[in-house]
Image (cartoon, rainbow, N blue to C red; front, side):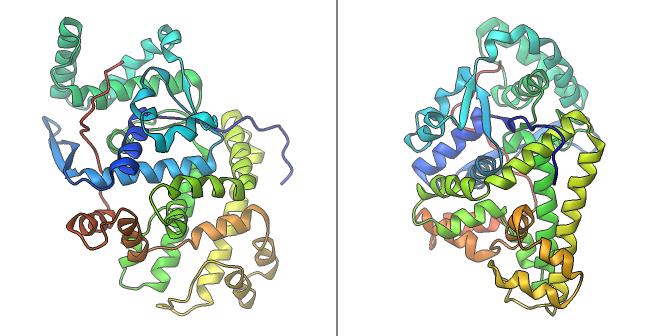
Amino acid sequence: MQNTHQAKMSNLLIDNWTLQCVGTLLSNGLVGGTASELEVAPEQNDFSYKAVPQDALNVRCLFQVLNNLVFTDALFVEGEHADTWRQFDELETLYSDGLVIPKPFQDIRQEWLPIRQCFVEELCVCPIMREHHEENVRTFKESGRSADPYFGQLIWGGAGMLARAHVLSIPYNSHPVREAWFGRVDSLFGLRSAERRFREFVAEQRVKVLNRIDSGGYLVRLHLPPIAALAIQEAQQPGDLLKIALQLREQYASLRQWLSEFQTALDTSDTHDLLAREKLLQSVARHIDAHCSAFPVGDTTVQIGVDWLKTTFKSGDPINSAKNLVGVRALMNRLVLAPAGGGIARKLAKLFGEEKSRLGRELETELGRSVSMSDKPDVILREI
């Protein structure tokens, strides 16, 4: 595709909290225990915390970081709290290699502080949540600690990160517990993200393929993000996961560049370029459709490799099939056909030495649930 303008770096704002959970997982393994998810009553007149497994949340953080390392040029975090994850040796290379960059947001506090309150008001969807936030503000001013630190971390801290993303004009990929809550709020936060559009596209195509080869729906319920699945497949120990993600980063460099250009088109509202990129995605979708039609329902022979690409010449559009054999289309197709199912989930438990334990079984079960996870960590980040 001819690019009419030079793409800027594809940067992403993420939470120190996310990296903290990843460091805890890689350092300590599966530890059991529960986390908390914020819930609002159907009448939206009250809220509560729902207990969910801690290990599943940490794993979701790991999946997020693995994906971002492959498809994003650089990850920005709030510099003031980078020590919460830099204490883990397993993550130090991300800092030393310039892949995760702590930014001194406190130096420009007056730029993002005014908009933070607007996000707080949108995140507090009922009066009791607003009252709870106001009590947190009052007690924090008096004692330096909120009455409900976790609520503050979720709402006040989340609003602060949304405000930073707004000022920085880059997308924000929040910690899964914040992301789960943001998804329940009837608002659009931050800029449109090319990476998110692509991630959703790949997930849709994976579901299409998995429905074709597994009529029972088990694989659809348990399919993991493709980059995570590829890393888990190759890893021999937990420490290998980040290393393999960095190798995949090199292999998928051209696709990362394509996403950078896609993000530039979104940022500049370049309609011509956006339509061209959506056309390429639809080319991949047609190729997947043709591939699925070449196999009977319930066929379990679908695997990663070059051979499966050639099968689609039997049906569909041969010219479109040829285009999907090379370049970013071929990389996209390989992501769609990445491993899925219980074998990968069990391999993940095995990496942590828990393939035969209760913790390993609980993790596999939770990864198969279509619910969002959240967390109430031992270390509470100060609201900022």
